[in-house]
Amino acid sequence: MKNNELKNLIDKYLDGALNAEETAQLEQWLDGMAADDAFAAMPEQEKETARTEGYNRLVKRIEKAQRPTIVKRMFTGARSWKIAAAVACLVITGTLFKNSLLDIVAPHRLTAMQSTEGRIKKHILSDGSIVWLKGNSKLVFPVSFGEGNRVVTLEGEALFEVAKDAAHPFQIQCGSLTTTVLGTSFNIRSSGNETHVAVLTGKIALSAPQSGKVILYPNQQAIYKEAAVIARENRNSASVHEITKGTEYDMAFNDVRMSEVVQRIEKKFEVNIALQDAAITGSLITADFTDQSLQNTMEMICQALNLDVEINGKSISLKLKKES
Image (cartoon, rainbow, N blue to C red; front, side):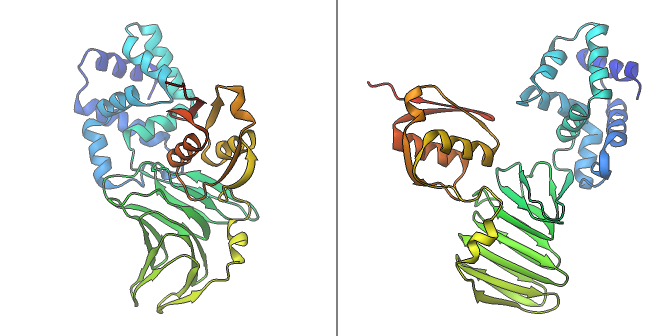
């Protein structure tokens, strides 16, 4: 799609004159932009939705999005050819913006991340779950989870810290083995026809075609071989270090200065934390935030140090409570 064609679509939207055929035209253009066939891999129902109302959904979601605020201003105020053309150029040339458009039009499309040998790659999923993908592994997941179960597919090994959501169970497909959780932390390692699952916190349910359901609790693990039953066995607690090595999973602190605590929280959750009062920096924390969500971590810190917190997307502000 040429810049002037996209400009015309923007102008028509501003005038309320965008029809279904033009929506399909935009979807086709986005399809051509998608890398690694990600757009083509999205569910058929989502594709159909994108065809019929994609552009209108795009604009509505841009207005609600946190990151592309400049795009929102362009769309709401762009009444001139010059600004509309600038948006078109940004779309055509900007890879980051291209991916944002795809995420908005097709929020449940499948995408993938892959790690290389000897490296750990972290990703925070749309529900807040954290995945540390270990060497030479691949995770396939939706850009944004829908209303049903949260389903991902794993090839290789990964440490999961799953956000708690009882209404939407989290499922990992690893070959013919399905791991179902509500909110917990565990490690899955698949090699060849053998899959090892080790639970750190909470509980998980394992199921496979040839085996009955097996429930695992903390300090338990199971081994599954394709076309066989799931075998439960006790896990040596010393292996916890091996499972979590190279990740930010361990968040236990014993008389640690807040300046260091903040750095570790920022790295784990990929946020920016501002301490509004200098007195907070030297405060000491003794607490275990392991397997806690960002929200819970902030609430625990505020309770311990008598602070107020303000969370705005990826920006967090902590300040001393005012005495009443």
